[in-house]
Length: 267
Image (cartoon, rainbow, N blue to C red; front, side, top):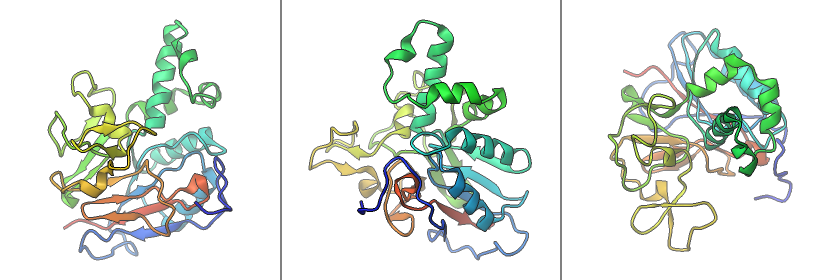
């Protein structure tokens, strides 16, 4: 991480548009052909999101997909949720469930239950403000997020975090928060937070990884198609390419840039 990076604050930098290079489809972004646009982790960086949208110029025919973690760390998490929901009024917008959205929705459920469980959760400093500012339309949008979104026309699977070596439910497939629960699909929640895997391909919790553990995308063999993911910030000039995966979190909230993969019309 460079010396001028400010953790927890968005640096004002020009966002980049990185055309996806995992397909051979022609670039139709200059005409009316629909595009699938996958936007990396925003983390409350409303200014950068608005800059990126100005460059993308999304049309009503495009499909905007946010890879998760709209909230937390940055200066205006509520404003980002409000902006994305505003976009959904006139555009096709989907959200992949990030680990921060999952924690926030869990916090909201505990608070509604009135047993005080939410007070035992860590990393919830922004959540009371979000509870006060967001309205029912915003909560409904978050609760309709996807654990996974399968795009068969691109042979692509979208997740927020990563895929452990062994999964106990069919992939590639689309799984939606509220419709598909981890109690029925064990390990489904790990897709929001997987980074490192042990030698057996099992999930390793944050800060518990050992030198021999590997980042999941380094060992992923493409069995579920190409995977586009966020969660892990790569402080690079463009999304991080692996043999069968692309990481689109380029660390905007840490002083990097907000990136998008732009997929033209599939044939």
